[in-house]
Length: 394
Image (cartoon, rainbow, N blue to C red):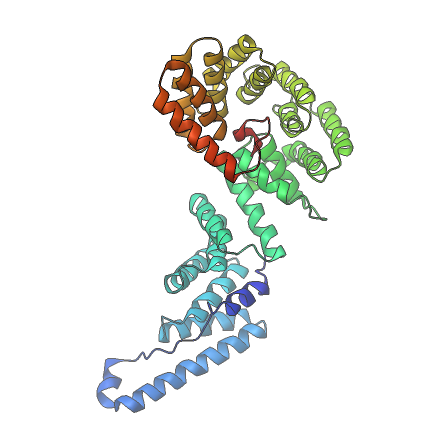
């Protein structure tokens, strides 16, 4: 996978890539030569190497260019161009450890260089340092590394893969959904979206070939849905249901996609998921949330208790259980679960809203006031929230 030349243009426009000339030499030369003569010799040597390195790179002579850039940064360790091109050339040559190290030197000189952070993240991905890779890619994107369309596709794809690998499936699906405008969808992209949709934390490259068909088909159906072809997505999902009748999370994923626009149809899919996988905590949670919407609080309590028992780390399950407990009279127990959810997701709007009501019911007026103020501030600065749990909307 090459790195777009637009990255270099991006960096030159912002003055990130530049030439500094430092004087390096042996102590012996400093003794034997006048300072002015030594400086001119070293400067000439470095300039020559820099020019030759650039020429070799532009001619496609990668091995020679790498050798020359190594000589250049040895002569001048504070040469940003040298470290940048060493890193990008090593990446293009699949020499990811060397690429990471060169880019780290570059970032010591220019810490806020978004493209370099993102490219280092791609190197780290290839050598298996997934946690740091995600940090670098996300930081690089925040600094503009994804402003070029080609670079955006590469970076968003890797970001989505890494989010799903970490278990942040909703965030990963949000990234995949943003790629739905792409006209050409690679098998890797379809498989990645299928893995996130079916809540599988493995990487596409780790997937056995005999299982790729399921995830690719699910990814294809999801991209049809994200692109606005809901009828085509429905037909594709129906085909998946027929081909893989016992596959876990397929009905849940289709329900997840449907929920914002058709909660009733989504609830049907969640219940079908529970017929296949009765202990499926996300599906139990969404059935419980649907019951909350319909003010069927006893049913919401039943399903949310099952969901929390199956997966107490699932934030939205804690939210739904907390709300169901408050609505069925156990305000103290409801507050405990709502506060647990807030520890998992401090900024969840629905949880703050539910806590405002729960604190008010329990007589904790000051706490209720604090939560109401928070909700008013969020509502004033954000678009109106839909009827879907915040965790599931991502």
